[in-house]
Image (cartoon, rainbow, N blue to C red; front, side, top):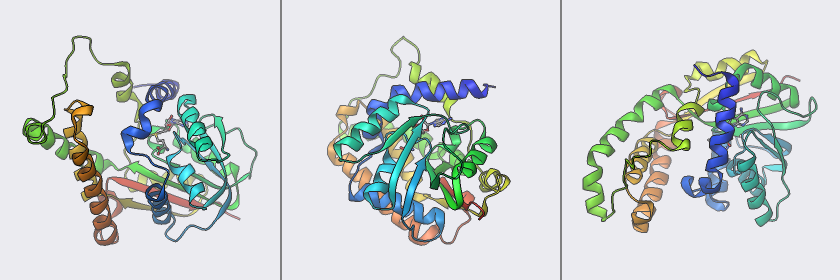
Length: 300
Ligand SMILES: C[S@@+](CC[C@H](N)C(=O)[O-])C[C@H]1O[C@@H](n2cnc3c(N)ncnc32)[C@H](O)[C@@H]1O
């Protein structure tokens, strides 16, 4: 069992090491596609079209995927981006500067936010809550820095069932990986070089501390005093497809994976996301999906 400090330290170090290649690894873009993705997720979390937020705080902003795209989409006026990793924030600042945006970055951690009470209209994040060792304290901080009536919205949190389901496409893809590499003509990536796991691989086992049931995500928001707390699920077919493809790709030398395959994997993922969105998400319980989203409103 790791201490809260060890989890925070591992997260900062892991994400510092990942920062330079993060956007390429996750296909992050600051264009119409990125803006549509994040606006859609925020709409799902809130249960309605997002309004315009004057001043917004992003927790665990990483390289800027969610916050920068929300600014570009006109949903957020002034963005304050925070993260425990200075490496991630440096990449974010470079991307913001390239896009001609002014974004304030602050290195801090989610359970100790260096901001005055009531100073934001929206506190949000993407794929960050599952890294936090002290969720109750963090949600109390989110509420403290929000103005009365302000909102929280967190998206992209792994669900417990989804985490278990992810093992199936991973196992299947590993079994069929030699056939897949032969079909697309990719060289295999050596799995053992005699040097043992890399520092990133060791840290990767420590950085994720939660996979949530809907109730486990609802509880800290409710306990912190948020009203109208709602938890929703997204990505099922898209999740299965995405995990299988990422596992296939991880067995090949990255430069040996043909461009046509990457285009197919990306387009297929978007098509299945549309299927999930229109057919499955309105009908199935949140806990069945890969990702959970939570929102709530500060009283007042
Ligand atoms: C999976 S990344 C997601 C980054 C970004 N939100 C995105 O969607 O691309 C998680 C981010 O949370 C940050 N993080 C981890 N633990 C944190 C903590 N205790 N406080 C603040 N940020 C943290 C990491 O440094 C990393 O940038």
